[in-house]
Image (cartoon, rainbow, N blue to C red; front, side, top):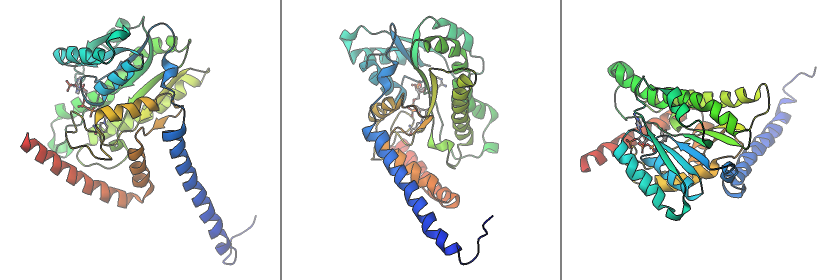
Length: 320
Ligand SMILES: NC(=O)c1ccc[n+]([C@@H]2O[C@H](COP(=O)([O-])OP(=O)(O)OC[C@H]3O[C@@H](n4cnc5c(N)ncnc54)[C@H](OP(=O)(O)O)[C@@H]3O)[C@@H](O)[C@H]2O)c1
């Protein structure tokens, strides 16, 4: 076996340099392909009789905007929210996007912070429908400035229920229906995640931990469907940076699009064939930079950005 000595060592550096340059070039080309050149593939989920997209947390923010985009693209909808009055308004708003389409928009109501949800009952209620897209969007983080031993147990449980338990068990309840639908065409389950699941944002460990959990669950469910036979049922984790929404009431910026703009990118990422996507190009660049740098530096920058964001949110609360 060849051994490394002080003479051969310098010869390796140009090779390592070349490999690094090729790796970076691959990243850039892949970025351009994914965001600007790739044929958009959400339309492949418009198959069979009356295709439905189910979206949780659809009464505000990204969920509501995604519902409008998907309705405009020809999907019937099953929406979820916790407030029936707000939901009825959203259904009207969604139908107004294309009043002549004759598309259906159903809904169900559930407070997903609760621990006593009848998941099987919800699954059974919609089992006869041709659901081809399943968007686990509901999520909430409640920015605060307390550590976990200063938060009460119920508060933490609610966050875990909203962000981890609900998407996990709701997906489980719908799997038989989604598997059946996938026999006649592609079906996708989307888990709407957060950069918080990958970086060290302070004070949000129950939320961030939940997002990290669904990221892993999403990947494994995809493998589960393929371990014994081929499958048309795919799972994808959509990693989200800052978006101006009901929760994130901070001015829009290049890196913080409005939910309506963001939803177009999200929908265009459906059916890409990838297991994890960053739908918005500016978020993608930020993610690549933050996760590509040494951890200690990334933590320092995220901490500074978090301080800044908490300050802005406090200011916006005062002016409301
Ligand atoms: N906005 C961001 O910057 C950002 C960043 C990273 C990740 N994300 C992720 O993107 C997804 C959507 O976030 P968003 O910013 O669009 O949120 P949002 O504007 O606050 O909307 C959240 C939706 O979830 C519903 N919801 C919240 N708590 C609920 C509960 N206990 N039971 C039932 N429904 C509940 C809300 O209902 P109501 O209308 O009744 O409030 C609303 O429909 C979440 O998974 C979030 O983690 C967002």
